[in-house]
Amino acid sequence: MKARFFILALFMLVVSIGADAQTRAGVMTNSGDTIVNTATVNLLFKVTTPNDVASFQVVNTKVSGTVAGNSLFQASNDGTNYVTLDTLVNTNVTTNTKIFLDAPAKYLWYRVSTTGSGTMAAKTSGYAILRR
Image (tube, rainbow, N blue to C red; front, side, top):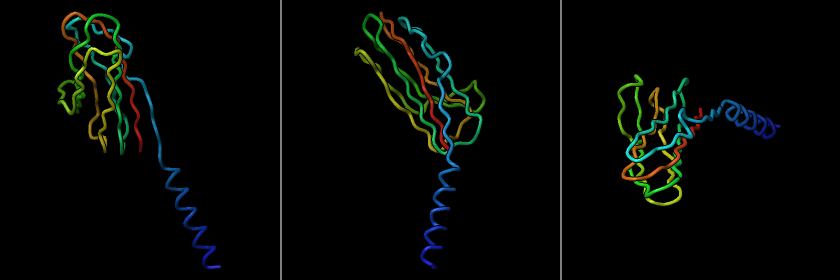
């Protein structure tokens, strides 16, 4: 009887822990914009609740020319002054992509700031997943 009670209590604990986990997914603002030559496109995402894990994926797809430049993963508490947390160096391939993690999510604002280089065009998109 004690063994059954223990197994039932353990099961209820596992289920209640799993029920508390929440996931929020979204597309970063300005997704789908095109980077032309040396232009900069900022993909933005605002975190509205505390999260244990935040992951952000940037996808830069070649449209024409020789793709080059950088995608900077940045964070801010005020939405104006950003610090760089990580970098993706874009090369002349069909798709440049990277997933950036911040665990636990410590900032209110996140962005991926992509600047082109030379004569090129690339479509940039960003996606976010937050887990509590």
